Amino acid sequence: MSGGRGELEGRVAVVTGAAGGMGGAITQAFLAAGCRVVATDLKPEPLPEAGGALSRLSHDASSESDWRIVVAEAVGRFGRIDILVNNAAYFEPASFVDTSAADMDAHYRVNQRGVLIGMQAVLPAMRSAGRGTIVNICSVAALSGSTGAFAYMSTKWAIRGMSRAAARELAPLGIRVNAIMPGLIDTAMMACNPPERNAGIIGAIPAGRAGRSEEVAEAALYLASDRSAYLTGSEIVVDGGLSA
Ligand SMILES: NC(=O)c1ccc[n+]([C@@H]2O[C@H](COP(=O)([O-])OP(=O)(O)OC[C@H]3O[C@@H](n4cnc5c(N)ncnc54)[C@H](O)[C@@H]3O)[C@@H](O)[C@H]2O)c1
Image (tube, rainbow, N blue to C red; front, side):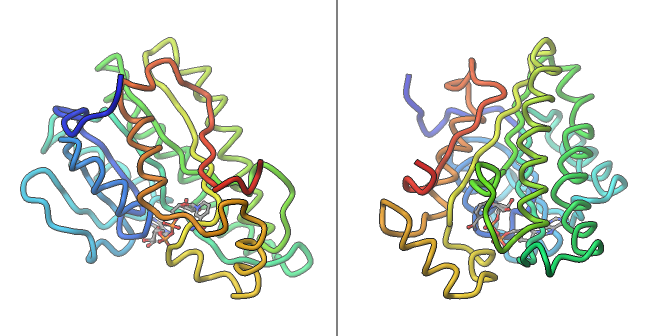
């Protein structure tokens, strides 16, 4: 079975961090597949217009009260939640010796705690529907012990573990939980790295270039759709061979 333009017809998705590179591309890919999308971000202004199929919300992914508003918007306006993409993330790269406890807390709050409360927020809607698919945007940073982004990397390892554990617990409810492990992707976040760090990573990528957000969105579309019906607790690596 292959994907088609209408493969998410009738579905409703929540995508966080949707004003950013990957979140924007995932939102566009879902809309093009016929999905209705609640697209959220700390700063939702740059999100594209898409008529009645798109709702834009200002949302701090680390806030429980904000998540209640997001769920109320999705269910109130579109009637259901079938898909959650936990994509928003905090990224302030620093080495182990330069990482303070406050840095750790800031990363933990959005990247780890935010993914937990996001998955819990959509659970009642998915549970009552008897189906759902959650896609957590993780990182190849959670495949090895990389240097230069200690706190960030630790939260991505946590997302990997949370995704697998939630997948086991939620499978009997018909809810799938999978992760995407992007390599270096050309977004505003990549621009937070020192240029020499990016140059070093690109030099190590067998494909010879950074990835594009649209290439990650393809994996999200697959995990959101019924084409991946038997995938749960799995990880799709989108990295041009970096971790191969
Ligand atoms: N770019 C890369 O090389 C790369 C590699 C691996 C993984 N990732 C992951 O991909 C995902 C998307 O990153 P991107 O590269 O598109 O970055 P990006 O900076 O383009 O987008 C991230 C978005 O998240 C939003 N955000 C930050 N904190 C938030 C919060 N508390 N609540 C809601 N929104 C918040 C930002 O406003 C921004 O729009 C992230 O989870 C990131 O960790 C990125």
